[in-house]
Picture 1: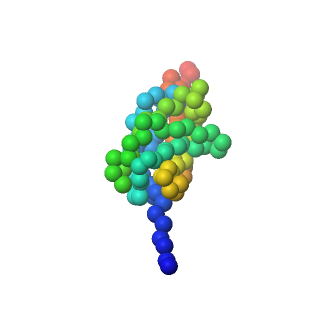
Picture 2: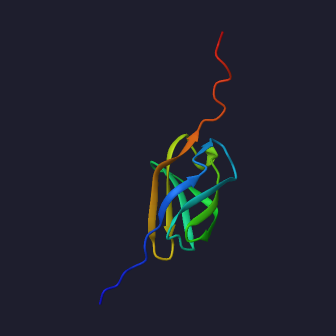
Picture 3: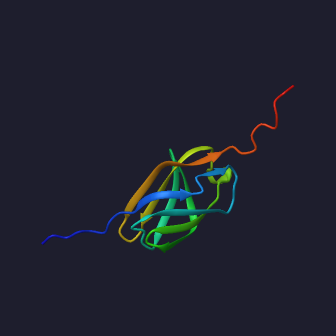
Length: 112
């Protein structure tokens, strides 16, 4: 007997790809393949993890969710990985280093 399991999620893109630190209620759209409800989306940087809440798998190729980048939730600037887990089968897919969190604001002008 030859059995093939379910294919793991594959993430092809994310939108937006950049957000400012302390952004709240940031709408995220993830495109790819093999997404299956229920699904869990997590943004990962080193040992820091931020869950994407209100996750909805619209179709097998698109997920929408809401991200909260407050410092108090563990948000920090830099590159983040995006991980999708199909909860039922525990298959996971990761898009590495494709989401950037900026400090925001930036310099207000050069000194005289």
